[in-house]
Length: 478
Image (cartoon, rainbow, N blue to C red; front, side):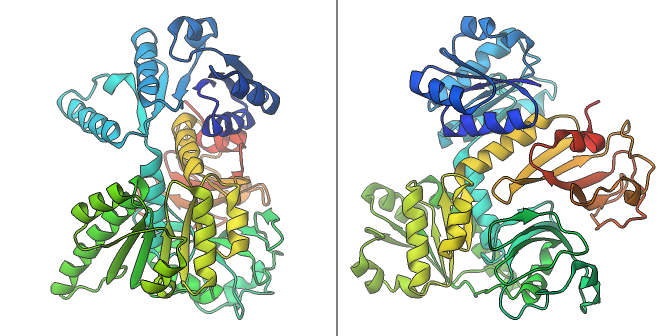
């Protein structure tokens, strides 16, 4: 694919690097000379100094032959207008815009839904095929981790299945046992997607793989079975009865809104005698900005709002923050999030989640004892990559500091794997098929060697980052 990326900031550069790794023809454009010089030194792609919202400049750079346009400047208006300009002349080009302004994002989403309901074949709103809001993406990732007790990051694949990253603790029966013998464990029927050793090395497992204390593993299971996984791995867990959110701006507010909604649903479920999990008795938010605190008081009447500095030892002691069950550090200061989460974990907080700048902080967070690190920019990059893959690829999720990627998609009727048994197309150490759902099926299942691969079946694969040729074997474009 030929892909134009407008904006050579951190996210734009990270996206361009990932797209180049996938063997795409990338054109990166920015009007900042320093950014252009840096990107030119770092990336093996065309980097141009120009105004990305100038149609003449885009045409001179070859936009007419592009397959996709991604706008990632710091200005929402420029991102949206650029997509509209290109759509007016080149409607066939796929257009993706990052929009940080939540009001713009929600208004556009409502307009898009209304237009589709009235005229399904209508052009997308403002010519933008997809709009991404970084705060929404990050809040979704944090909420998914919260839903499952902050024991590790959770990739929810559908309403039933997911991939959970857990640490191997002392006393785990998995320690020292070759994977070829895991089936001998009572009740064990899970698949290990990847292994990240305590020394930082990563691998796709095989029968000879052996785990040690401190390793991290990605386990495929039903979401309802995550508590059983914790028993096998001996991952520390806690009952989350008192949750503190650091940061009352957009991400923190979205997380609070989601948790309040779940708490209210849980209360109704208990009234009708239905068992429920994930209900928090107390939610607290801390922020030093008086305006954000006033907004939080008005919006969340059931949440205790503390206006103060999270680094203030007196405030932390007076409000007994050290004894809370979970801290979500979700402010716009990513470095402070990491430091705060690590410090409070050392002072007795049972679980911590930190919103970080990018995926490279994952290893640091792990060494500091932070339970879950959510990369703001990484979630956006993965979301864009999933949309750009096209064909029958639905989503892409990076794991192990972007060394591997999990791909969701449908098997193409033209794929050479159709009609063959999984054992005949497998390549251990190169990729794994984690989940399989027949074309006429409703639920996933872990495939076996004798599973016959069908056209239009849904698969979840894990492979090295950027290995588009392997993915194309299963979900190639038509």
